[in-house]
Image (cartoon, rainbow, N blue to C red; front, side, top):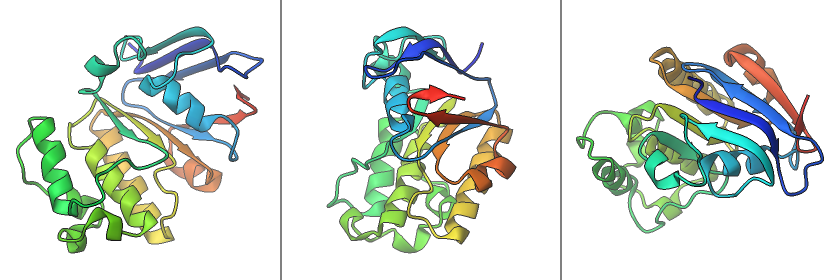
Length: 203
């Protein structure tokens, strides 16, 4: 079973349907300029929007109808972070680990390079640091699928390289990953496959 399967998927404004698949254990990069439709595609896959047409399945389920059930199996980095600004980085991670009934511990903060920010409040983080915390939160539930909307946005080159390395490690462990990016030169050497989105359609 594919982790993601879309057939003739249409947005409210899209004239053409989108056919997109992500196989189990595959990392696919969705590449396109701002406004190409990457974020809308992610919102449809997460279940935040109802498609205008076509079929969409995430881990075999309709994400709009079964969003709550999928939440335990899908890790998400949205375009805009929704983390509580007054919690510290460590408190944020502990909260999400407990929500997923995972043991508090491990080195998720170290994996994303935020161990030195553990006591800092979320609102004090830079944009790039918030993106890294978003990724750590997405990994808290040990998801079968990661849906990541521009996870390297605002990161410096070293942090981007570290993020891609972490994603490859999770891919190698069997996690399916769909990651949107506007860095095609990075994706070309790091993802298993690249799909280009332009005007709400793949080409």
